[in-house]
Image (cartoon, rainbow, N blue to C red; front, top):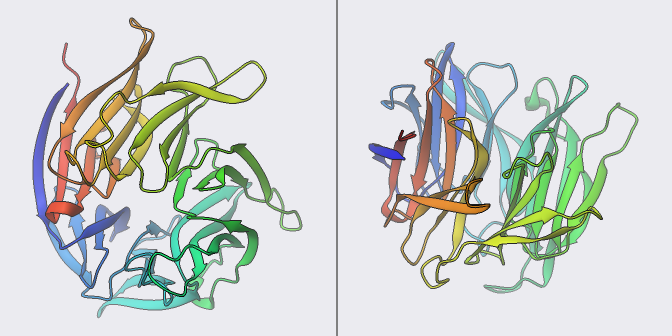
Amino acid sequence: MKISKKKLGELNKCYSMAELMVDGEPCLLAAAEKQDPCYLFDAAGNRIDTVWDGPGGVMTMAALPGQDSRFLATRKFYSPNDAAEASIVLAEKTAEGWDVHPVADLPFVHRFGLLERNGRHWIIACALKSGHERKEDWSKPGAVYGARLPEDPKEGIRFQTLMTGLLRNHGYSRTEDGQALIAAENGTFLFTPPAAEDETWEIRQISAVPSSDSVLLDFDGDGKPELGMISPFHGAAVTIWHLDQDGQYVPQWKLPLPEAETEMVHATWAGVVNGKPSWIVGWRKGTRSTIIIRWNPARGTYGWEVIDTDAGAANVLVVTDEHGQQKLICTNREINEIAQYELKEED
């Protein structure tokens, strides 16, 4: 694979990213973990605006479906020890600039996602914990909340509790089928939004193995989704699990690198890159590398390639430009760098 890198900008403790249409043009948002700004970049990678100067603590951002220049974001989640005032806000561009409106107070909210089923839009939000008495206190587990997404979230979002008792409730990803995949110390769970207004959420546990982040994708082409896991919480193990004949996930592969080199695996994205199912992961300590993992049919196992090293990505995102070309965007938190990578297959 031929890899080229372009630095888009610097942002102290850069963390969260999201795609957003602004005035009909595709753009990229990048925000910070600490007390720092949220920036807007155009499709060419030029910084064109500052959405806000603070507060930060932005773990997640998501564009509102079908709406221009409007997105939801978490704020004031500065660390697991400093997130009691975390909330979800709505940001929207106006003639005077960017306005920010609180839509839900949700202490310790870390991740959230927007889902769609049968034409209805839903939001699911995950609190890492529910409280603490001191630093590194995990005695009060987190929870998962869900709500119908209002047409105008400025009305406020009225969450209901879907699940409690989730220790280190850290991981969220969206499956190809439009479900939410939630990862915690208790295992990995699939949340499916209601099919109709008067129905309930469907919740199914697919693994009891502690996980910091999980993904579902058919990596090996057998027609069944594999389960990729980073474990334990902020851990160093990258594993892929295969569905057996009884419908249970069993170990298939583990990244064969010393865990001292892969400490604090945090960045994760799974999807199709250049026509091939791929899992991109990055870690924030050790070698601070970002890699791409793929199934190698000739060898009958998985292989990986290094995209970057000494970068320390917090999050990664694959976007597709107007020419259909895919690009990888990374918030390389440990070096305060927002970077873009082109990944081209070699003949």
